[in-house]
Length: 396
Image 1 (tube, rainbow, N blue to C red):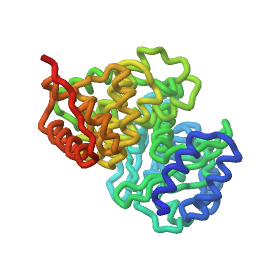
Image 2 (image 1 turned 180 degrees about the vertical axis):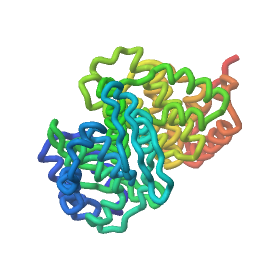
Image 3 (image 1 turned 45 degrees about the vertical axis):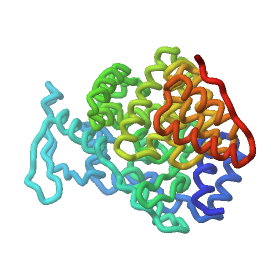
């Protein structure tokens, strides 16, 4: 069996099963496959404290700037040249700094903090596909220096990296880490968003709710999707997957009411559909699945089951599609959309009698498209070859 077909399902088990025995078995298998490596050699725990030992006025600068903001400047390569404090009006404190070979600039402390957070929040690691078997050095390059350094600032000790998708175009990883809450696994991109949310809360003075979602963004995304402005849909909701993956594993998720769950499901449906329009179908598939973890009933769930099924058609996973489409029907997805695809699935799975009955029913209702007529002709031919006659009386 190809390694690629194993690592995805096993990585999903790591993310979903908190049993230590199961996790240990998964890690052992993934290490033998060459797609997992421990991160002890490249972990950066305590780097900021070690730097501070060589700076004479380190504690005073930390008191004025804030320990983590000073660390952020080091990560971004910002050189602090001078800090001018105003004891009477702290908001007037200014910082003279330089980046690389650029000329020195001066900003108020508040303005500098905003720029720092914006720079870190918009940073995107290219995630170059590592060579296998995975090594600590290859894992460090895949994770990126920023995340390696930032994780330490929030007392997150990185333990393992697992490659969960070996695609050269869109490689994915799962990070294992230790926090105050114990040992955890998280998709690396979700972990990056987790870190960025912590950085944003630093700017807000720690008062921001950790899982605050602007549910009104769905209204804006819905209008943008109706206007076929798919890039705007993505821009409006691009932060949601990371936040919701974290939310899903928190007690807050259990407190969501049905309306909130439906709005979250619709938001993920819109975002997935927009990515689908941009030919990023693997990511759309993950978003629809994430949506179904929040909403399992009602029309929103019906649409998500339907969209998930249609994405699987390109992979010819017709058996899985049948269950998804039946669930979509039960939840109110439009019959005119679902039944023709369901009939085709029956045909491809060699359920010829079921396919013939359903496709004949669609044709009898005058809802048959050219695709339905083509599928119906194929099933009739195959039934004839099998010496089975099929005659469904049409409605008068």
